[in-house]
Length: 564
Image (cartoon, rainbow, N blue to C red; front, side, top):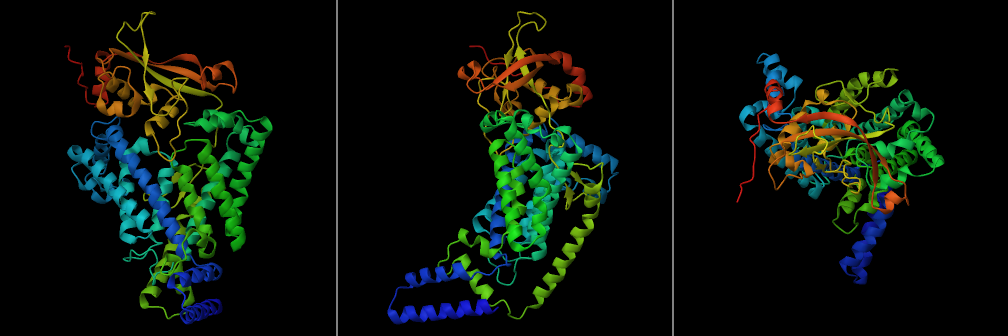
């Protein structure tokens, strides 16, 4: 408090000197800025809240943008996995109990006629999420209602998306969004709400989140694939990760000793650095900086959706106002200037609402601690589960990534033809997807933080079989009718301006990066591929009638071009 009073006295003296010397207010503001740079106090989080909210708004914006562009085609009424069938089954099992419906599948979808209005629901939910998240980004402030609305909207999408939303980062964004709600005032939308200082319990909630994310990822690796223990996992990771980018190509070809160093560094960051986060201020900031830099490296070296961007969020809670002041202007009336003034009157008498807020924050901390019990038990268990939720609202979850690393990359390649599919002379033409490897001369894409959900699921499908992934057969059926929704999910349909193919098959290939400077590389090839075998035998629309009926999928209309 003494520092704050001294700062205010200096400001008053400076203002008096400026008036007596006839200096312009602008110059006075510049001098004040220099003072505020030196006197912002530590261990307050007004500026931290603004940074956190804007960044979380950005993550929400990307997530809702992905939903807007892809959800109707993936899980809409005519999607690859129509959500209304899944919802109808849940409703039947719940025997009409509204409470059980919302408990099993927390979603606003139960409030609409989902059998007829599902597509509109998916679009309106995404648009509402985009608008609210953009508001948070621009303003740098929010209240409970906006943040709870974002959380509820995304919850509604995740729980409808089923297979397409089965990734660990969906729970992570929901947990992050839940915590972010209580950074904010109940009503006030200002970036610096004077009567609502940032809750330190929520700040510690974020630190607890990044601690669990990293410790969970580190332990699952030690308990998982042998390559993490013999330091060889990075020999394979860049080539076999779900969606490599151009940097992955070069990183893969680093020397063996560098890959071992990377693996050791990974263990250090995930198993040692998290303990820095519970240490003194300076150690905590060092830990937060290392975590952010680690995520930046992962962003640069692969297309892991918005996962790594999202994981930066809780690390930002390691920094207080004094450490983030460089990010803000210090001119008179600015956000930083207002924070400086608030710090100067830190000992003012608290209002009744402030005491109520403190009680609520303590209760929130108790809830997080209670919900963390099964999470901690899971972390300590030799049978540690990865990316698991222990409550339907996904408030506190357990995380982990790449517990096992694939040693070979295989891809499923869709091909269509007009010819007899059993003739060796049949001419098969290949479909290209948005981002997954196909054409060996196509440069790997660079799309993070955006996310192509179909491409990721096709990466998983290559390890399995089509019987385990009936949606893959449904995709082939849609491509045999040049379905516009299916076409929007891929980058190239060789039959786009022609009649659709009579037959489609899916072939299984192994892919490896070409060597830098090799003949293949000089010819513009990023990949070499070898045929593994057939994945899905040739099918026609006639041959899948029983399958479509059994799966209760809509039989497609054949879209043939008019002959002139």
